[in-house]
Amino acid sequence: MTFWIIATAIAILSAAPLALALRKSRGIGADSASAAEIEMKVYRDQLKEVDRDAARGVISDEDAKRARVEVSRRLLEADKARETKAKTTTAAPIWAAVALGTAVIGGGIWLYSDLGQPKYEDLPLSHRLEVAEEIRANRPSQAEIEQTRPSSPPIQEPDERLLTLVAQLRTALETRPDDLQGHILLARNEAVIGNYDRAYAAQQEVIRIKGPGATADDYADLADMMILAAGGYVSPEAEEALSKALSRDPQNGTAIYYSGMMFAQNGRPDMTFKLWRPLLNSSAADDPWVPPIRAQIEAVAQAAGVRYTLPPAPMENGLRGPTQEDIDATAEMTPEERQEMIRGMVEGLSARLANEGGSPEEWGRLISSLAMLGDTDRARAIWNEAQVIFGPSPEALAVIRQGAERAGLVE
Image (cartoon, rainbow, N blue to C red):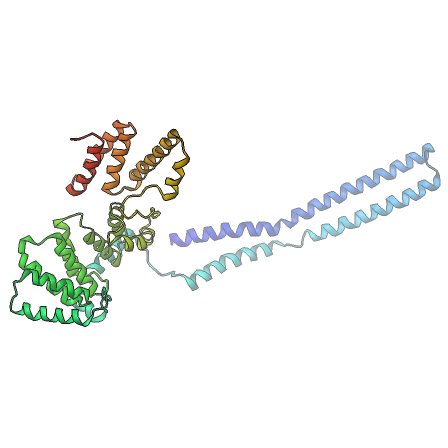
Protein backbone atom coordinates (compact mmCIF):
# COMPACT_ATOMS: atom_id res chain seq x y z
CA MET A 1 0.00 0.00 0.00
CA THR A 2 2.84 2.39 0.80
CA PHE A 3 4.26 1.81 -2.68
CA TRP A 4 0.93 2.65 -4.36
CA ILE A 5 0.50 5.81 -2.28
CA ILE A 6 3.98 7.04 -3.25
CA ALA A 7 3.50 6.03 -6.91
CA THR A 8 0.14 7.82 -7.11
CA ALA A 9 1.60 10.97 -5.55
CA ILE A 10 4.44 10.95 -8.08
CA ALA A 11 1.94 10.46 -10.94
CA ILE A 12 -0.15 13.42 -9.73
CA LEU A 13 2.93 15.60 -9.46
CA SER A 14 3.87 14.59 -13.01
CA ALA A 15 0.40 15.28 -14.44
CA ALA A 16 -0.12 18.60 -12.64
CA PRO A 17 2.37 20.65 -14.75
CA LEU A 18 0.79 19.30 -17.96
CA ALA A 19 -2.71 20.23 -16.81
CA LEU A 20 -1.57 23.67 -15.74
CA ALA A 21 0.12 24.21 -19.09
CA LEU A 22 -3.13 23.28 -20.85
CA ARG A 23 -5.13 25.72 -18.72
CA LYS A 24 -2.57 28.45 -19.13
CA SER A 25 -4.18 29.45 -22.42
CA ARG A 26 -6.82 31.28 -20.35
CA GLY A 27 -4.18 33.59 -18.99
CA ILE A 28 -2.71 34.14 -22.44
CA GLY A 29 -6.13 35.18 -23.80
CA ALA A 30 -6.66 37.63 -20.95
CA ASP A 31 -3.30 39.25 -21.59
CA SER A 32 -4.14 39.60 -25.29
CA ALA A 33 -7.54 41.14 -24.50
CA SER A 34 -5.93 43.67 -22.18
CA ALA A 35 -3.48 44.68 -24.89
CA ALA A 36 -6.37 45.24 -27.33
CA GLU A 37 -8.17 47.45 -24.84
CA ILE A 38 -5.04 49.58 -24.40
CA GLU A 39 -4.79 49.90 -28.17
CA MET A 40 -8.45 51.04 -28.36
CA LYS A 41 -7.83 53.64 -25.67
CA VAL A 42 -4.96 55.03 -27.73
CA TYR A 43 -7.24 55.36 -30.79
CA ARG A 44 -9.93 57.14 -28.74
CA ASP A 45 -7.29 59.59 -27.48
CA GLN A 46 -6.25 60.19 -31.10
CA LEU A 47 -9.84 61.04 -32.07
CA LYS A 48 -10.01 63.58 -29.26
CA GLU A 49 -6.69 65.03 -30.38
CA VAL A 50 -8.02 65.40 -33.97
CA ASP A 51 -11.11 67.28 -32.67
CA ARG A 52 -8.91 69.65 -30.64
CA ASP A 53 -6.62 70.33 -33.60
CA ALA A 54 -9.63 71.04 -35.84
CA ALA A 55 -11.11 73.39 -33.24
CA ARG A 56 -7.84 75.34 -33.00
CA GLY A 57 -7.55 75.48 -36.78
CA VAL A 58 -4.29 73.53 -36.82
CA ILE A 59 -5.69 71.24 -39.51
CA SER A 60 -8.38 71.79 -42.11
CA ASP A 61 -11.83 70.30 -41.85
CA GLU A 62 -11.10 67.98 -44.77
CA ASP A 63 -7.91 66.66 -43.15
CA ALA A 64 -9.70 66.28 -39.84
CA LYS A 65 -12.44 64.27 -41.53
CA ARG A 66 -9.93 61.93 -43.21
CA ALA A 67 -8.05 61.43 -39.89
CA ARG A 68 -11.28 60.63 -38.02
CA VAL A 69 -12.20 58.01 -40.63
CA GLU A 70 -8.76 56.34 -40.46
CA VAL A 71 -8.59 56.32 -36.66
CA SER A 72 -12.19 55.10 -36.40
CA ARG A 73 -11.38 52.25 -38.80
CA ARG A 74 -8.43 51.18 -36.67
CA LEU A 75 -10.57 51.46 -33.55
CA LEU A 76 -13.18 49.13 -35.03
CA GLU A 77 -10.49 46.61 -36.07
CA ALA A 78 -8.99 46.65 -32.54
CA ASP A 79 -12.44 46.12 -31.01
CA LYS A 80 -13.12 43.23 -33.36
CA ALA A 81 -9.73 41.62 -32.48
CA ARG A 82 -10.50 42.02 -28.77
CA GLU A 83 -13.80 40.17 -29.14
CA THR A 84 -12.15 37.36 -31.11
CA LYS A 85 -9.40 36.86 -28.51
CA ALA A 86 -11.92 36.93 -25.69
CA LYS A 87 -13.80 34.04 -27.31
CA THR A 88 -10.60 31.96 -27.53
CA THR A 89 -10.05 32.11 -23.74
CA THR A 90 -12.58 29.31 -23.32
CA ALA A 91 -10.82 27.05 -25.85
CA ALA A 92 -9.32 24.85 -23.06
CA PRO A 93 -12.13 23.94 -20.65
CA ILE A 94 -11.29 22.48 -17.27
CA TRP A 95 -12.50 19.01 -18.26
CA ALA A 96 -9.66 18.81 -20.79
CA ALA A 97 -7.07 19.33 -18.06
CA VAL A 98 -8.79 16.72 -15.90
CA ALA A 99 -8.84 14.28 -18.81
CA LEU A 100 -5.14 14.83 -19.46
CA GLY A 101 -4.26 14.19 -15.79
CA THR A 102 -6.41 11.07 -15.73
CA ALA A 103 -4.77 9.77 -18.89
CA VAL A 104 -1.27 10.26 -17.47
CA ILE A 105 -2.07 8.61 -14.13
CA GLY A 106 -4.18 5.82 -15.61
CA GLY A 107 -1.64 5.15 -18.35
CA GLY A 108 1.15 4.87 -15.79
CA ILE A 109 -0.85 2.39 -13.70
CA TRP A 110 -1.71 0.32 -16.77
CA LEU A 111 1.89 0.31 -17.99
CA TYR A 112 3.20 -0.86 -14.60
CA SER A 113 0.50 -3.55 -14.40
CA ASP A 114 1.47 -4.80 -17.85
CA LEU A 115 5.26 -4.61 -17.64
CA GLY A 116 5.95 -4.60 -13.90
CA GLN A 117 5.32 -7.03 -11.07
CA PRO A 118 2.53 -5.50 -8.91
CA LYS A 119 2.19 -8.61 -6.75
CA TYR A 120 5.92 -9.18 -6.28
CA GLU A 121 6.71 -9.12 -2.58
CA ASP A 122 9.31 -6.81 -1.07
CA LEU A 123 12.80 -8.29 -0.63
CA PRO A 124 14.54 -6.64 2.32
CA LEU A 125 18.25 -7.19 2.73
CA SER A 126 17.84 -9.73 5.53
CA HIS A 127 15.52 -11.83 3.37
CA ARG A 128 17.88 -11.69 0.39
CA LEU A 129 20.76 -12.83 2.58
CA GLU A 130 18.66 -15.74 3.82
CA VAL A 131 17.80 -16.71 0.24
CA ALA A 132 21.46 -16.52 -0.79
CA GLU A 133 22.50 -18.69 2.16
CA GLU A 134 19.77 -21.22 1.33
CA ILE A 135 20.94 -21.39 -2.30
CA ARG A 136 24.51 -21.89 -1.14
CA ALA A 137 23.54 -24.65 1.32
CA ASN A 138 21.42 -26.55 -1.22
CA ARG A 139 23.53 -26.19 -4.35
CA PRO A 140 24.52 -29.32 -6.34
CA SER A 141 27.49 -31.42 -5.30
CA GLN A 142 30.64 -31.92 -7.34
CA ALA A 143 29.43 -35.26 -8.72
CA GLU A 144 26.00 -33.90 -9.64
CA ILE A 145 27.32 -30.89 -11.48
CA GLU A 146 29.90 -32.91 -13.41
CA GLN A 147 27.05 -34.99 -14.87
CA THR A 148 25.20 -31.96 -16.20
CA ARG A 149 27.92 -29.46 -17.07
CA PRO A 150 30.90 -29.94 -19.42
CA SER A 151 34.34 -29.35 -17.95
CA SER A 152 36.54 -26.45 -18.98
CA PRO A 153 38.64 -26.91 -22.13
CA PRO A 154 42.19 -28.27 -21.71
CA ILE A 155 45.12 -25.92 -21.26
CA GLN A 156 46.65 -27.18 -24.51
CA GLU A 157 45.82 -29.75 -27.14
CA PRO A 158 47.57 -32.95 -25.96
CA ASP A 159 49.72 -34.92 -28.36
CA GLU A 160 49.78 -38.71 -28.56
CA ARG A 161 53.12 -38.96 -26.80
CA LEU A 162 51.84 -37.10 -23.74
CA LEU A 163 48.67 -39.20 -23.65
CA THR A 164 50.77 -42.35 -23.74
CA LEU A 165 53.05 -41.15 -20.94
CA VAL A 166 50.07 -40.23 -18.74
CA ALA A 167 48.48 -43.63 -19.32
CA GLN A 168 51.77 -45.35 -18.37
CA LEU A 169 52.03 -43.22 -15.22
CA ARG A 170 48.49 -44.20 -14.18
CA THR A 171 49.37 -47.87 -14.57
CA ALA A 172 52.62 -47.50 -12.62
CA LEU A 173 50.88 -45.77 -9.69
CA GLU A 174 48.41 -48.62 -9.31
CA THR A 175 51.22 -50.63 -7.75
CA ARG A 176 52.79 -47.62 -5.97
CA PRO A 177 49.88 -45.87 -4.23
CA ASP A 178 52.16 -43.90 -1.88
CA ASP A 179 54.47 -42.47 -4.56
CA LEU A 180 54.17 -38.74 -3.79
CA GLN A 181 56.15 -37.41 -6.75
CA GLY A 182 54.31 -39.75 -9.09
CA HIS A 183 50.90 -38.46 -7.99
CA ILE A 184 52.08 -34.84 -8.18
CA LEU A 185 53.24 -35.46 -11.74
CA LEU A 186 50.03 -37.29 -12.62
CA ALA A 187 47.76 -34.54 -11.25
CA ARG A 188 49.66 -31.89 -13.17
CA ASN A 189 49.60 -33.73 -16.50
CA GLU A 190 46.00 -34.90 -16.20
CA ALA A 191 45.08 -31.22 -15.87
CA VAL A 192 47.20 -30.31 -18.90
CA ILE A 193 45.34 -32.75 -21.15
CA GLY A 194 41.94 -31.69 -19.78
CA ASN A 195 41.14 -34.72 -17.58
CA TYR A 196 40.27 -32.54 -14.60
CA ASP A 197 38.29 -35.22 -12.79
CA ARG A 198 41.31 -37.55 -12.88
CA ALA A 199 43.55 -34.58 -12.02
CA TYR A 200 41.76 -33.73 -8.77
CA ALA A 201 41.56 -37.41 -7.89
CA ALA A 202 45.35 -37.57 -8.17
CA GLN A 203 45.66 -34.33 -6.19
CA GLN A 204 43.55 -35.86 -3.42
CA GLU A 205 46.11 -38.65 -3.26
CA VAL A 206 48.88 -36.05 -2.97
CA ILE A 207 47.12 -34.51 0.02
CA ARG A 208 46.51 -37.95 1.56
CA ILE A 209 50.15 -38.87 1.30
CA LYS A 210 51.35 -35.52 2.72
CA GLY A 211 48.87 -35.70 5.58
CA PRO A 212 49.28 -32.77 8.03
CA GLY A 213 52.11 -31.47 5.84
CA ALA A 214 49.73 -30.59 2.97
CA THR A 215 50.14 -26.90 2.13
CA ALA A 216 47.71 -24.16 1.22
CA ASP A 217 48.82 -24.46 -2.41
CA ASP A 218 47.99 -28.18 -2.36
CA TYR A 219 44.41 -27.47 -1.33
CA ALA A 220 44.13 -24.49 -3.66
CA ASP A 221 45.30 -26.68 -6.57
CA LEU A 222 42.72 -29.30 -5.58
CA ALA A 223 39.95 -26.71 -5.63
CA ASP A 224 41.21 -25.34 -8.95
CA MET A 225 41.02 -28.78 -10.59
CA MET A 226 37.57 -29.48 -9.15
CA ILE A 227 36.24 -26.14 -10.39
CA LEU A 228 37.68 -26.73 -13.86
CA ALA A 229 36.11 -30.20 -13.89
CA ALA A 230 32.74 -28.57 -13.08
CA GLY A 231 33.02 -26.00 -15.86
CA GLY A 232 33.74 -23.08 -13.52
CA TYR A 233 31.23 -24.04 -10.82
CA VAL A 234 32.39 -23.91 -7.19
CA SER A 235 30.86 -26.97 -5.52
CA PRO A 236 30.58 -27.55 -1.76
CA GLU A 237 33.55 -29.93 -2.01
CA ALA A 238 35.63 -27.28 -3.79
CA GLU A 239 34.58 -24.72 -1.19
CA GLU A 240 35.81 -27.04 1.56
CA ALA A 241 39.20 -27.30 -0.16
CA LEU A 242 39.32 -23.49 -0.44
CA SER A 243 38.57 -23.14 3.26
CA LYS A 244 41.43 -25.47 4.13
CA ALA A 245 43.77 -23.51 1.86
CA LEU A 246 42.83 -20.20 3.49
CA SER A 247 43.15 -21.64 6.98
CA ARG A 248 46.78 -22.42 6.14
CA ASP A 249 47.46 -19.20 4.22
CA PRO A 250 44.87 -16.36 4.42
CA GLN A 251 46.70 -14.55 1.58
CA ASN A 252 46.55 -17.39 -0.94
CA GLY A 253 45.50 -15.64 -4.15
CA THR A 254 43.97 -18.67 -5.88
CA ALA A 255 41.81 -19.50 -2.87
CA ILE A 256 40.69 -15.89 -2.43
CA TYR A 257 39.77 -15.57 -6.12
CA TYR A 258 37.73 -18.77 -6.19
CA SER A 259 36.07 -17.94 -2.86
CA GLY A 260 34.92 -14.66 -4.37
CA MET A 261 33.61 -16.51 -7.41
CA MET A 262 31.69 -18.90 -5.14
CA PHE A 263 29.95 -15.98 -3.42
CA ALA A 264 29.09 -14.42 -6.79
CA GLN A 265 27.49 -17.67 -7.94
CA ASN A 266 25.31 -17.75 -4.81
CA GLY A 267 23.89 -14.23 -4.74
CA ARG A 268 26.49 -12.46 -2.60
CA PRO A 269 28.32 -10.03 -4.90
CA ASP A 270 29.04 -7.87 -1.83
CA MET A 271 31.26 -10.62 -0.40
CA THR A 272 32.88 -11.13 -3.79
CA PHE A 273 33.81 -7.46 -3.99
CA LYS A 274 35.21 -7.48 -0.45
CA LEU A 275 37.50 -10.37 -1.40
CA TRP A 276 38.49 -9.32 -4.91
CA ARG A 277 39.26 -5.63 -4.40
CA PRO A 278 42.13 -6.03 -1.89
CA LEU A 279 43.40 -9.05 -3.83
CA LEU A 280 43.53 -7.02 -7.05
CA ASN A 281 45.24 -4.09 -5.31
CA SER A 282 47.97 -6.30 -3.87
CA SER A 283 48.58 -8.50 -6.93
CA ALA A 284 51.26 -8.33 -9.58
CA ALA A 285 50.37 -8.05 -13.26
CA ASP A 286 51.34 -11.65 -14.03
CA ASP A 287 49.24 -13.24 -11.26
CA PRO A 288 46.76 -15.59 -13.00
CA TRP A 289 43.69 -14.24 -11.21
CA VAL A 290 44.28 -10.60 -12.22
CA PRO A 291 42.77 -10.75 -15.77
CA PRO A 292 39.51 -12.48 -14.74
CA ILE A 293 39.07 -10.16 -11.76
CA ARG A 294 39.67 -7.06 -13.88
CA ALA A 295 37.11 -8.35 -16.41
CA GLN A 296 34.38 -8.84 -13.79
CA ILE A 297 34.95 -6.63 -10.76
CA GLU A 298 33.11 -3.54 -12.04
CA ALA A 299 29.97 -5.60 -12.74
CA VAL A 300 30.34 -7.24 -9.32
CA ALA A 301 30.64 -3.83 -7.65
CA GLN A 302 27.53 -2.59 -9.45
CA ALA A 303 25.58 -5.67 -8.35
CA ALA A 304 26.77 -5.05 -4.79
CA GLY A 305 25.62 -1.41 -4.93
CA VAL A 306 29.16 -0.03 -4.77
CA ARG A 307 30.53 2.77 -6.95
CA TYR A 308 33.88 1.53 -8.19
CA THR A 309 36.19 2.47 -11.04
CA LEU A 310 38.78 -0.04 -12.16
CA PRO A 311 42.29 1.32 -11.51
CA PRO A 312 44.93 1.32 -14.26
CA ALA A 313 46.52 -2.05 -14.91
CA PRO A 314 49.86 -2.62 -13.16
CA MET A 315 53.02 -2.99 -15.20
CA GLU A 316 54.61 -6.38 -15.66
CA ASN A 317 56.75 -6.11 -12.54
CA GLY A 318 53.69 -5.29 -10.44
CA LEU A 319 54.51 -1.58 -10.19
CA ARG A 320 52.84 1.37 -11.84
CA GLY A 321 55.18 4.14 -12.84
CA PRO A 322 56.03 6.68 -15.53
CA THR A 323 55.41 5.85 -19.16
CA GLN A 324 58.08 5.98 -21.85
CA GLU A 325 56.70 9.37 -22.89
CA ASP A 326 57.24 10.65 -19.34
CA ILE A 327 60.84 9.43 -19.38
CA ASP A 328 61.53 11.01 -22.79
CA ALA A 329 60.09 14.31 -21.57
CA THR A 330 62.68 14.56 -18.79
CA ALA A 331 65.55 14.84 -21.28
CA GLU A 332 64.89 18.55 -21.91
CA MET A 333 64.09 19.46 -18.28
CA THR A 334 66.20 21.44 -15.89
CA PRO A 335 67.30 19.66 -12.68
CA GLU A 336 64.67 21.63 -10.73
CA GLU A 337 61.90 20.66 -13.18
CA ARG A 338 63.01 17.04 -13.14
CA GLN A 339 62.97 17.03 -9.33
CA GLU A 340 59.46 18.54 -9.34
CA MET A 341 58.26 15.87 -11.77
CA ILE A 342 59.64 13.12 -9.56
CA ARG A 343 57.96 14.64 -6.54
CA GLY A 344 54.66 14.76 -8.40
CA MET A 345 54.94 11.06 -9.28
CA VAL A 346 55.74 10.20 -5.67
CA GLU A 347 52.75 12.20 -4.43
CA GLY A 348 50.52 10.45 -6.97
CA LEU A 349 51.74 7.05 -5.80
CA SER A 350 51.15 8.07 -2.18
CA ALA A 351 47.58 9.20 -2.91
CA ARG A 352 46.75 6.02 -4.82
CA LEU A 353 48.10 3.73 -2.10
CA ALA A 354 46.08 5.67 0.49
CA ASN A 355 42.85 5.42 -1.52
CA GLU A 356 43.16 2.08 -3.31
CA GLY A 357 45.94 0.14 -1.64
CA GLY A 358 48.71 -1.48 -3.63
CA SER A 359 51.34 -4.18 -3.82
CA PRO A 360 54.19 -4.54 -1.29
CA GLU A 361 56.64 -3.47 -3.99
CA GLU A 362 54.79 -0.16 -4.38
CA TRP A 363 54.81 0.48 -0.63
CA GLY A 364 58.55 -0.18 -0.52
CA ARG A 365 59.17 2.09 -3.47
CA LEU A 366 57.13 4.91 -1.88
CA ILE A 367 59.14 4.69 1.36
CA SER A 368 62.52 4.77 -0.40
CA SER A 369 61.41 7.56 -2.79
CA LEU A 370 60.25 9.81 0.05
CA ALA A 371 63.56 9.33 1.83
CA MET A 372 65.43 10.15 -1.40
CA LEU A 373 63.46 13.41 -1.61
CA GLY A 374 64.44 14.24 1.96
CA ASP A 375 60.99 13.59 3.48
CA THR A 376 62.25 11.12 6.07
CA ASP A 377 59.46 11.75 8.58
CA ARG A 378 56.76 10.78 6.08
CA ALA A 379 58.77 7.76 4.98
CA ARG A 380 59.01 6.59 8.60
CA ALA A 381 55.25 7.15 9.16
CA ILE A 382 54.38 5.10 6.06
CA TRP A 383 56.79 2.35 7.13
CA ASN A 384 55.04 2.20 10.51
CA GLU A 385 51.65 2.05 8.77
CA ALA A 386 52.84 -0.72 6.44
CA GLN A 387 53.95 -2.82 9.42
CA VAL A 388 50.38 -2.71 10.75
CA ILE A 389 48.70 -3.43 7.40
CA PHE A 390 51.05 -6.17 6.20
CA GLY A 391 51.91 -7.61 9.61
CA PRO A 392 49.89 -10.82 9.02
CA SER A 393 51.93 -11.48 5.84
CA PRO A 394 55.66 -11.84 6.64
CA GLU A 395 56.55 -12.32 2.95
CA ALA A 396 54.91 -9.02 1.93
CA LEU A 397 56.39 -7.19 4.90
CA ALA A 398 59.85 -8.45 3.95
CA VAL A 399 59.46 -6.83 0.51
CA ILE A 400 58.46 -3.50 2.07
CA ARG A 401 61.32 -3.74 4.56
CA GLN A 402 63.75 -3.62 1.64
CA GLY A 403 62.39 -0.16 0.79
CA ALA A 404 62.76 0.88 4.42
CA GLU A 405 66.38 -0.36 4.35
CA ARG A 406 67.11 1.69 1.24
CA ALA A 407 65.59 4.69 3.03
CA GLY A 408 67.89 4.12 6.03
CA LEU A 409 65.00 3.56 8.42
CA VAL A 410 66.08 0.05 9.44
CA GLU A 411 69.40 -1.75 9.37
